[in-house]
Structure formats: C-alpha cells, structure tokens
Length: 638
Image 1 (cartoon, rainbow, N blue to C red):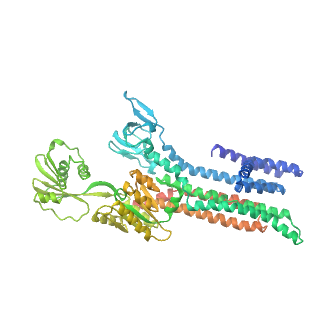
Image 2 (image 1 turned 135 degrees about the vertical axis):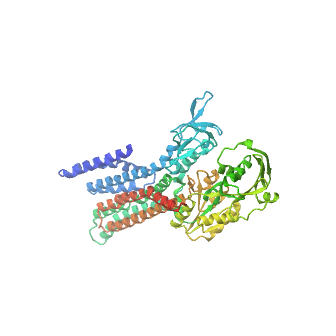
Image 3 (image 1 turned 180 degrees about the vertical axis):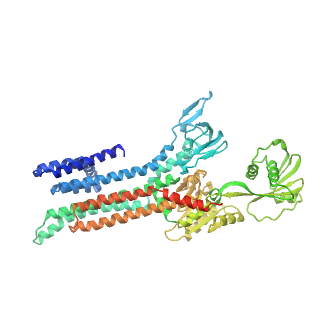
C-alpha cells in the first residue's frame, strides 16, 4: 500500500474501534449519542461528504458519494447511528480494495516506465565518458553502453559483444547474444560486455519512446462495453435517486389518502436502503479495471494493446490474415539445400560459390557467404565479372568458377537438372563442368507453425497468407504451416483488395485481424478490424498503423493475445451479470421492506469487493503464457 492507502486503512480501523466501544457502552441521551457517533462517522467519511457537497456545488450531484452521503445522513436522522456508520465504513473498505487493485494493475504497466533511460554515455575527445540527455544525441553518434545499463537509443553495434536482457520489452526471460554488426533496440539491459553503438534513430523515434507512448495512451481508447457502462451509470444513478425519493413520499401520501397510518419513518428507511443498494460502484469501477488488467497482463508478455477497444475487438477475431516475409518467415535469405554433382563435395561447392560471390552485396550472395562461414581471402579471387540477369564469373585459385541462374549455365553450354523445389536456385560450374546447385530460400520462423496451431485452438475459423512472392514459394510455405488459404504475387494494393474481399465474406460479429511488419503493410493494417504489427523489427509505419504490437516478432504471441482478450471479456461479462442480478434482486427486496441496511451494505460494498477481486484476475496471464509455451514446444520441428 502507498501512504494514502495506509492512511485510509488506519481511519477505517479507528472508526471500527470507536463504533464497537460506543456499542458496548451504556446508552446515552440522544443528543450525546448522536454527537459521539458523529466522531467515527467523520473520521472515516468526511471526504465522502466533501465530495458530495462539491458535486452539488458543481451541479453534478449524481454519483456514489452523493448516494452514500444521503443514505448515511438519513440513517442518522432516523436514529440508526450504528447502521449509518457501518454503511460509510464498509463503503470505505470497498474503496480501499478498489484502490489497491487498481494500484496493482498499474504496477504492471508502470513497470514499463522503468525502461525509460535517464542518460546516454558519449565518449569525448579525451576518451572520457560524458552522460548526456538521450534527447540531445544525434543520429549517427557512437554511444557507450556499460554492463548493467539500459540501451538508451536504437542503433547498430560497432564494437563489443554481450548478452542483452530483453524481458521488459518482450517478456522473454532468455538473454539474447549480440555482437558487432547486430541491431539493438532501446530499453534492453546490457548484461555482460561493454558495447559501442552507433545510433540509427533519434530518442523520440526509438523503440522505448514508442512503447511508452503506446502504453500511456492506451486508456484513451475505451471499449464499447466500457463506454456502455459509463453511459448506463449516467442514466441509472439519477433514476434510482428519483426512485428513492418517490419511494420515501408517494406510498405514505397514498396511505394517508386511504385513511391509513402513513409510517413516514419506515418508508424513508426503505428509501435510504434503496439508495445504498443502488450505488453502481461495482460496475463503474470493476469494468475499466478488468480492461486495464488485461492490457497490463498483455504488456507483461511483450504484447502492447493500444486501448481496451482493441482488446475487445481481438476477443471476437475469427479470421487472421498474415503477410509472409518478416511475419511468418524470417525475411532473410538462407542456404537451405546443397546439391553437388560430378564428384564435387558439398564443402567445395559452397566454397567456390562463396569466393565467386565475395565482391557482391546482393542478399543472395550474402546468404552464400554466411553458409560458407569462414573469412574470405580476397587474394584468392581475380577476374570477377558480374553478368546482369545471369550471375557472376571469377577466377578462384586460378580456376574458372561461374555461379548464377539456368540462363548463365545455358550460355556456358551446360545442362542443368530440372528442379521443382521452391526457392532461388544458384547453379555453379567449375572449369567448364557443372558442379551442382545451391537452394536458397526465406526460412520459416521457428514458431510460425505453433502460431497457426495455437490460433486454431483459440477458435480462429480461417488463417490466410498474402504475399508478393511467386506461387510455388507461397504454396510450399502454406502447406508447411497448415494455412487454410493463400494468395501469391500480390502488390500492396492487391493486398488491400484481398482484405476487402475477406471482410465482405466474414460472418456477423466476427472480426478480421491482419498481421504484418513492413511499410507496405500499413494500409492493410489500417483497413483490418484489428491490425497486429511485429514491433522489434517492424517498420515505424506498420507499428503506427497497428492496434496491437508484438514486441518480440513472435507470431505465436497472437494466440496468447487472443486468449488474454477473451479471458478479460469473460471477466467483464461475469461482473456485469453478477452485479446487476444482485442489485436488482436487493432493490426489489428493499422496496418491499424485506431488506435491511445490512443487506444494502452487502449489495453495495460486498458486490463491489467481489467484482474488483474478480477483475484483478485479468492481470494474471502466467497460466495462459505457459499454455502457449506448451503449444509452441509440441509444435516445434524436431
């Protein structure tokens, strides 16, 4: 508890003790007893009275403080001092529960605020480190990140190796090893070695700033359910106030006209009980708290939801559409097949191709050099010639090597085998003889298959992939992952058209989610019911256009996000049904005179405490995360 919460707890305890002491003492004359019971009442309830008076002065009287003030002051006027004190004490107990619960939810989100770096280390001309404000660091500046410090700004490592703790950003507890040439994102903690990082963004555009901005603004976008409860309370509270007023005066007047005793005291007591029962605290507090808890629980798992409205939309998702490159696949080329022929070994084939391609910066060439995995001696390569649209020829250790497509082999008068495997083929010839081929492809992410399986288990009806790649590649990826549908050879505009078609064909009350990472995905992310962006490596435009951001680029987190959203919505509906059912039942009993003030206290404070405790369950997502991990492990390739 914070200081304010502790102070309220002490006030509640003090008031309870004073009421018990007064109850045990012999009865005093009425004026003295009234004065004595006013002491515990004011100790615990003076702020409620003050807020009620402020509401009346500001012409906005109809809130829970007004209801509590009228009910308790009325109880005192009727001589029910113990019940009047009990109502205000238990109301404050409920408020304390609510305050602690909200604080606990906020801690999950506010813990993210700890990732905001206070400074960046810049090396001066004498080699000394100077701490400067991250906002003052220009793009291209080399900053120093020491062990134990947070990376303040996104950049590329120019010197050093280390392990980074990314738990605050991605929810992933396993450190990530980095070295010179790797990209690093702000907010990660440097665990071991000293790193020198060349910044690639300004601090305001860095990952840490964008995360904090998303989290701070998430509460601005309310879900339909949340807005409904707010509107409901605005109508409901004045309605029950006027209802209580009618209950206090109409029946006695009718009884008087009928020549029977009016019993004003009994009807006023019923009206006061009716007011206490009717207080909408359980709904007004627990519903936003449930959504807040869901957003906080998701953020702890590396899933940033930009508002409760998107959490609600995510829970109703029935169709999930994926971009391929960078979303389901790694977005980088890799040698996935080595096929030597005519007595050439696999190692010799890769070495010859890597040396021939050593001067090229093309992604295909880089993937071959990565497959070779050794330092290349430039002196071994001479007479390099790049043939546009064909490939490259070179002298490697004095021997002629050609590496390229089938057209290059045909130009050299060589016959190549017919290949049906999807991917890019690089044929290699050595000394005029065909030596074999390398198969290069964009590799599927390790968790992509688990992501599709998890979505099916989460109740998603259809999974679709949209890609600009050729038909054979798209077909192979779709079959490998078990997707329901795919569309290949699409331009960015074609993707929007496909989304429009899918939106038109979806079922009533069913949402469509699109998952992408590139700048060309921004229009589609905006058009979908729910846009989900890959945050760690995704483009700024995609993250800006999306409603949900996955901080570790793991597509299996989509199913986890849906499970969190659906649990949150279940908790919201449970609280609505529970609170309204108990309240309406007690309101009827109160109006009929079958419910006492103690019943009213349970209907108000008891229901609020139970609803708030139920709402805090939305914050705990460890069981769902474990379930998702189990699906990932079972679905992982052997």
